[in-house]
Image (cartoon, rainbow, N blue to C red; front, top):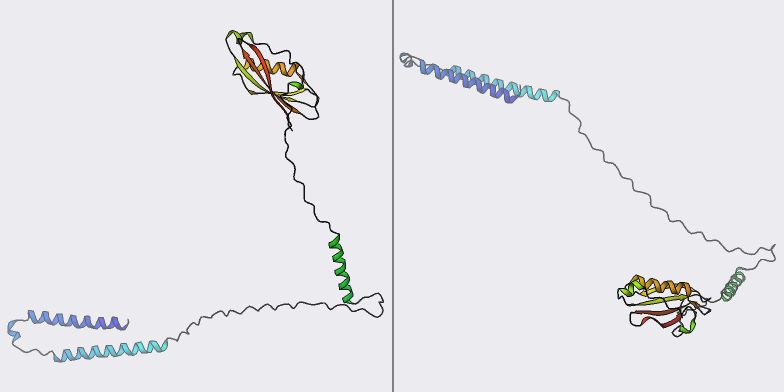
Length: 247
């Protein structure tokens, strides 16, 4: 029981005594009320008891404090950070020039060696040729060969036949053809540049050129442009427009 609990206990005792005294005072008969009642001794004794109890509690608390051993205070150890050692700069080692020894008659002093190396480097630099600028390639320019009709040797007299079914339907048109001729004069390829908008007219022209036409030989490949016209009134006609060399 600590000091606070003892104090509360004493107060409770005093309050209970006072409440009993008040009850007794209320319920005592009136004839007894005239007689004086002495409470002085009782109250004095209660005060003495309370003072003695307080003194005992103080002495007990002081004795318990003496009996308890003093707990040592914990001291936090701080880690000591050791400074890192600074790197020691390495001194550059310089080699001393080798001096010619007396036993080596062919040894030369360092000044003569340096002069010889400089002269050798100059000779090597003089020997190197200067790079020549690469020639710029000349662009290819096609060579004109006129209309190309003079290059045709065979097949030009036989014009393609007008398809009967197209003629009966009244279909007319022009076929623009580009012919590639090889170095031996043979037809390498024939391409329709502009169609007559009817496959029958296009096919009859291509078939006749590929199978029957022959041109003059030439050192380079060349191209010939021809226009075939299909008309119901005039029939089939052709016209050479251009011929030129190309890669």
